[in-house]
Length: 332
Image (cartoon, rainbow, N blue to C red; front, side, top):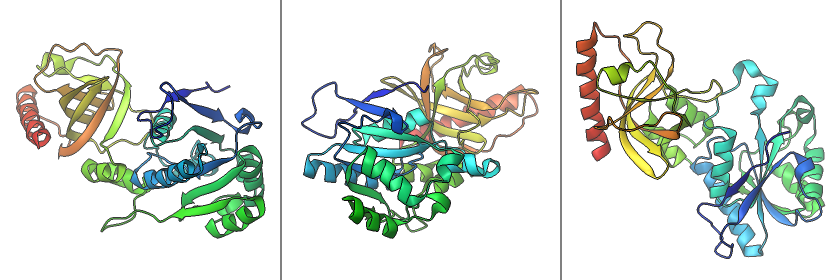
């Protein structure tokens, strides 16, 4: 049974909420308290990364909820449908489920329904899903989705079909136009592509924040400490996206503390047997004890490729250059 999670609203987007209000997380329809779940406003989507396009959908749902004095619920799915239907091509996620839930809470959700995506669910028709989730479980009055929303078996349902079913079940549907820039629409796929080429700066403009890796600091080989550059080492789970191997400028965030950092991603090719990870050197600090702490490493800008060096001296020279480049970038 999944752990039941509660998240404090930060920031609280409804002024009338009392201090300490919590966001309920429902893991499947059986978790939904049918007696008092609705009526409500519902936003639906995968929301991988909760980027700026997703934020527009959530903001519209929050506005409808406030206008009608109704709670705003989010329906999302885990794992990614492709991980079940075609695992060989399943995308790596931009963030963990826990990160997604926190960001949905911060964008105004009063509760989040996490629908477990299974082969059985994939066979459910659009009409069956609408009746079970929106009409019966949540008693939705307004449903907000992206303009390209698809649902039901074979992704046969679209916004037009959802509106027809809304008329039958007593809810209205608002489709939010996709957010774009001069290149393309904002999407989780595009963020993954940008990370894959090391363009963390453009990825941040779509996400609305720097891309970050979060996790406990693990003990590495301590080569950086021996070279005068002690690093906080984080492993990247296989299911999560990661920036292209290389060196970046960014920040290490430890609770309320935020430190400028030079960050490397990958296997250090100068040393045989080095493991693939994120290593963050906090500029000009050798006194931090971060082992075991949960921290976030935020990526701001690409500096260079991950390169092999002929010995320690050229490596140290390059690392000094990386530190100065990071200092210059972050000073902007």
